[in-house]
Image (cartoon, rainbow, N blue to C red; front, side):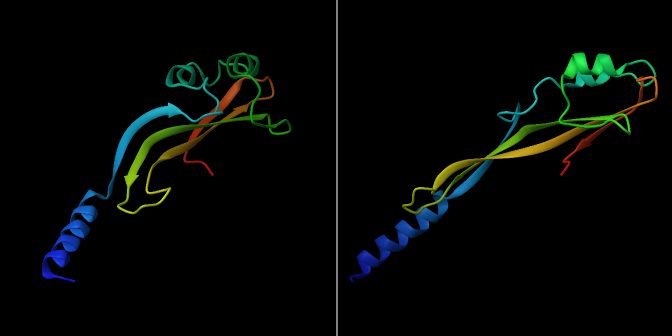
Length: 127
């Protein structure tokens, strides 16, 4: 191989490696198929000592989990917080793409014996 050909190959390899990389785009939307009726406003409307279980069920619907003996309802949802866009300088089917970076949330609501909200807790990045 001539020195000119070697230089061209080296230049191509260097240029291709410089073109590879990734970009993170901050976004904020609900994951497909996730509960979409939980927001800052609806969470602020949950007042300990005032809100009833009926109010919660009318606002959010059926919970993902319920513990009747403990009088606890659990609502879960996922939001996409960022998109990771990537490109690699290789001829492959998956050389370019995007990955959603999601965050899982849980809202745990505890009620007293009269079905009045006694405690609320939002868990971010819940398992």
